[in-house]
Length: 169
Image (cartoon, rainbow, N blue to C red; front, side, top):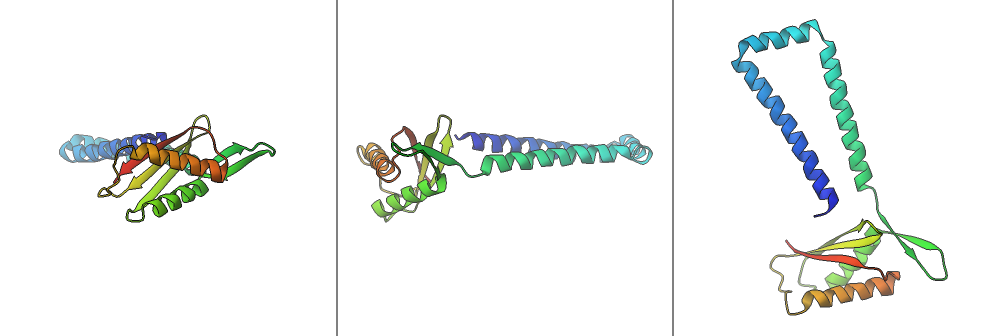
């Protein structure tokens, strides 16, 4: 599982727990009328509590927004070419090369890909095929990985290691 998916799942869990806590709090206020009066007294006597709570929630929201922005900005692969300087390539370009190759190689299957960078400047390629695709044959994955490696080598001069995952959706 990619790190971004783990982080998004964790953020969803925190938000879900917060919403559940707020829901349980207000339901419990309904059944415990003495706490309801206490809660109303706090809000009427100290309205700064609402300001503090609002600032905390807005700060948390701003932090989440910034983290999602940083996680979803474009990723670039830097390739060092022999006679030239380093070149940066958007991962969307690599994704389009691989998707075109897979759609031409397997026209009966609906294919889409995700390409991302993992630490040490390695590519992670996740190819999503239809669940009903009749692809699994002997040595299919090895053959497909070699073909994609050749494509990356020929088109982008990328000779480093990459991770290829086939996902049957």
